[in-house]
Image (cartoon, rainbow, N blue to C red; front, top):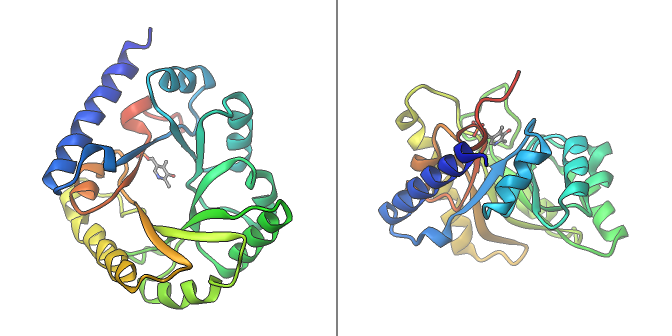
Length: 230
Ligand SMILES: *Cc1c(COP(=O)(O)O)cnc(C)c1O
């Protein structure tokens, strides 16, 4: 059943392993997040049976519905998050990849504290400064980390970016390299409130290059589940 899914997953795992070795790391240091937006639950459950543990969604309602059907899985919110929707996901996600403003940080903090928990988040960085994308400028990251350091309901665990979509993914290698440089610089500073544990970058088109440049979380949809219906 779902042979194509198994084939896709095996291919991706091989590519991840190869890119990991190329960057001097072990395959198990790279975590695959299967981006399951628009994918039916049946297929998601099949992927789970095949060993996929982490799923990424970019819409709150879709995430909560799918969480309810497969609460054993780890669910990641990878898309832009509106403040008024934070309350629906605080209990359901293991990691928010898309922290992109101070008001959003305050809201996550408020909702997490109310439930007596601390939520792991990544700061989304718009490295290429694309006007159509969310995320902070690289130059804003230090001040932002400083601004959120006293919010007990959230723990910064790293950085995330979405690279520009280009035909030849080699073209975005410098984007990944730049974010890795920032990640390493912050790691060296050993800021207690901003542990640099996860670097979330790489999608279907460019994950191999992202891993070669240091990503340890990759968010892959199309190459696993096929083209999404528009
Ligand atoms: C949809 C999406 C992905 C996956 O994209 P594919 O090209 O299908 O792999 C990754 N990250 C984010 C933030 C997304 O919205």
